Image 1: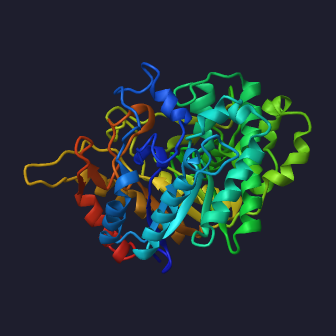
Image 2: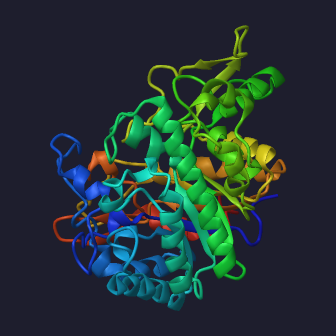
Image 3: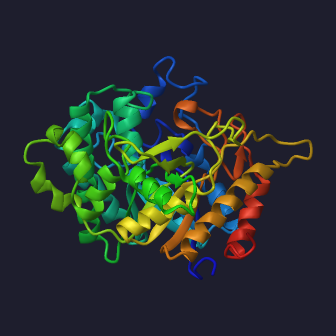
Length: 452
């Protein structure tokens, strides 16, 4: 059957990872600006102060997108550029930057997909408690209102919050991402609840202010892949494992966030394990959290193998064998994650589904001929896209795919040591070199995936 005729082919980035201009145009410090200053937090001791210098070179970058057939671009807004204090006075220079970026995209025939929040919380709000502060939903609503008022005449497609699992699990539990906290379960659960209320308030504001707004949510979670997909017991076990909410914390759960956002309720197994940690009166917040969504996205890179087991859970994880292929980031290569993840998610939530991030870090280098040859990346994406197509052929409502990332960039705690881009960035000079994969992806887009 193949991909839909109107399939959304795109690529994605995030503000802190590419923009640079960290203290220009009225921007204030974010939690990531401050986290990078702490010794030992970033593996290569780098920071996002310059990043890809997209703040100054966005027109060049958009021209490169257009030249490589990109017609959909997912990007995030730095809250710190719009509201330097997190609330209050609007920074018009920051508004102008995004307004010019949006105009440039539209002039080049590229549809903007805006992510409201991709991890770079204003440091001013973190000092007021960040996601632990019950005022956060109204701070987020104020910020969203400015976005809607200033850009809603040209942007219709929005994702509210990127990877809430990482915001909480890596940033507030394990402490390996900004703001680097190691909180107890009660505080994690409260922070998640405030985050989900913030998502709900953003949806309300966008519905009110942007006629025809197309709104989604961008969580993450490595899919459970049945070891033997011809065995109904393994398929049922993988489904159960993917949506289970248990263990030490719900921070990395899929269902704890998405059941709340889509159905307006927390999953029963999660309530049994963690319900006692929810803030008083949480039940009355669920209609706010469960706002109508137009589509559901997920960031998916890898999955875990699951088989049925005779234990309390009814499933067990099966490790990959020694020598299993891995990316440069040491993530296992598991193409079937893009079948079973989207299929299970569509089956459960019944919303049009898009992959909001998928891609591969490779050991890229500029070769003697001046080009960047990355056959591993094209092979990876081809394998994953075939599986996404299979999910659509089997009935899942698959609407789109955003490759992560358009540019090599600042990969959070890994600094600049990982290269996910379709375009190679020389960080010393800023020079952009489109990789072989950029030209290959342009052909995939042109053929609507029929050449896979």
